[in-house]
Length: 445
Image (cartoon, rainbow, N blue to C red; front, side, top):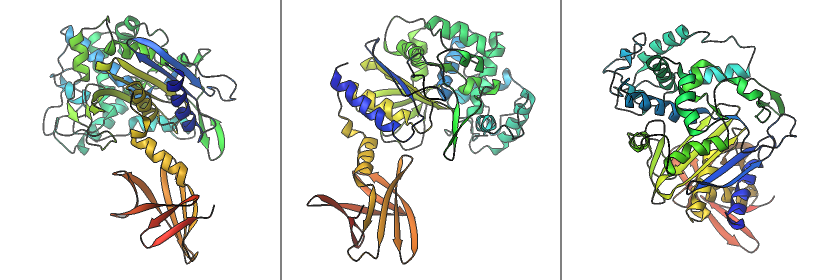
């Protein structure tokens, strides 16, 4: 890529890193089936001495789900199962059926009708807090938890998208049982090895490698070492350990030929099956089999998935018809990997970053953050960034109230209950004033 392209991307990544001095990011970009860019930003170790690279190993979280879905379709291709089969055909110990039969396809698309049961979150938190009594010591505890949790059902199978990590854990058990190999071995033999993903696998021992992340957390202002959330119940839902180079090999099968899998099988994975239902800056999104699909990303189809296991995050995304893709990993939850990925893809498409809503929002945050007061000084306003959000704190007569500020329809608004109060920007010599309801605010610091 040319210097202007890489310079804009690197500037955006560096801006993301400003809020977390311990964070690192590794990113790689594909175009036309070729690696055209890769770079590491920051350090992967606890003492901040070892640079991160595109070969550094990280937990990639829910990016794993598409490999689990691919494994299911490989077994279907061989006649071992059908996505139309009831889950009970293979694992009768799970009592998932309520107002309808829960089939394998429902677990693939998060449409079992059962809401999140918090298994992955519990395991991850326990790795952070070693003094807490652990749950899920064996599979029977998980089965009992899921069976009790299925009584929380809110919809019939196939009716509603409810992101359900537990469903992918169950799919991993189906893969292991039908293949006779166990989940880890099947994925290793049938997915990772054919793709040449030699640095990818499962289990915390992977992180004994010389080029791997060191898990940490921040407690207040103190940086502490924590355990990596390795657990068999996380494997199929979010247990893969990988690196940028290997993730690019994976998404490369969707953007170039030749590849070791049937084209029809890959098309089934990324076909939209159910509307996700959550609003996004880029319109409606759908879930395929282990992939999120946006059919109108600046006139293109974007296929992607992100992952987060507390100590690391990841994003992979590609646009099949444009034959471009991006993969990135980080050791920090503060890095918006999906934003970085979308930024890189829009630049590859030749689209200016100013069209990205989160870029506009961040630039407004950078421009407007600070302290203000009205003409009389009786009302003070502080605009400050917390995480990825801008907040407005109004102080008057000894009382302070704080509200979020959002960007909608190209304009900023303060959200007060159900009301959206617009913020009008007024240009003045050498400054920008803010008109909010009856007050014109001048910056004082």
